[in-house]
Picture (spheres, rainbow, N blue to C red):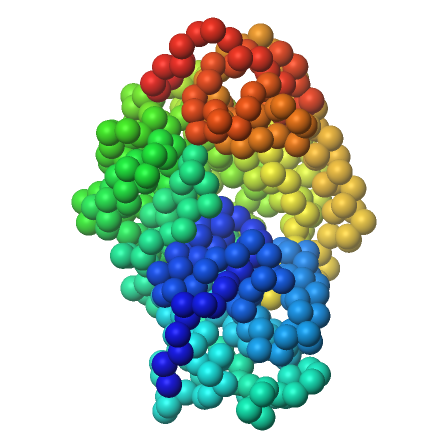
Length: 478
């Protein structure tokens, strides 16, 4: 039975990384192309999709709490469909339906193309006709309260969890939430098997898009009025498609007419090559910013993480980048409390932070993920939670101190800022420099999307205050 979606409303709520944000935009685009109206509040929706992350246990607990809240809406409106998608859905699968039986749909990262058809089945209240690859009804359960439906039907739950090695979502349009900058996914999945990481198991092996499709999408973004793009991948600089490696693709994107800024995330240190650094140094549109996840500053820990580099080779990469691009802004990811990490090895990580002096750092306490190789390490290796927490707090203190010192040294600098949105303080706008520094400065909403020269006048440690200056903004590097 076909059901019209012309009057149906959908709400998508996303948790997690930039790839999840991009996937949320993709799902909104798929739903919108099938007649759904995207709304800003779950209270206004007929379908609520919670798009999830599985990197840390804390993120999953947040999602479980959130869907429990959303069940309150379902108790009031039994026809409301609740779906959980993304990495957490892929990892937990049918167990998620057991823990939260009010969820109607569990869908992994490779199922979004068929999202509207699955929602149609759920709203119709019927099952599947025969078997369909990757999709199955996982049970028939009554709603939590009130009548099952006006027709007395019982509802089904659907599980869509097959990983498709061919699915790159080519040909589908994203519903971009920002009119200022755009995420451009070029890669899905990951071939690296870092022992702490769940990504290869919930997103599958690395799959790289065709370069002509990537360039077509960038050109469409430019036609929409956007001039900054970020190329996305789990290890984005490992991209290879036929005779296109990542440096070639990056150069081609940077030369698309109308593009003023290009960023990419998240790279792997092993694939920071001389060829990549050459492109970054030569192409005016490529921003002076690099996220370089170190994860640890100790060789033994890096080996147990299966990162496939040493502290010395990591530092060689840093030196190569800074030699070619002296003004580069570096950020990193660090995990503390990895199984087997001693206090001395943790001190090595602090030494790395002080040696490199990253402009920013994303710091984490190790979170055990079922299904990852690290879970098989000896139980005696696991660091006590209070010890790991103390290490995290010390790491954050060191990182923030370094960041504050760097930012203090940049006061008085004039940078080109791309204005993104209004700040929290009235009369203030928020934007980013090419080096990914966040700046708040006086302005009004009509300048959103424009490039403004701003003098950095003060810093809170992590962000800047600024003032517009009468210097014409330039294309590319200031």
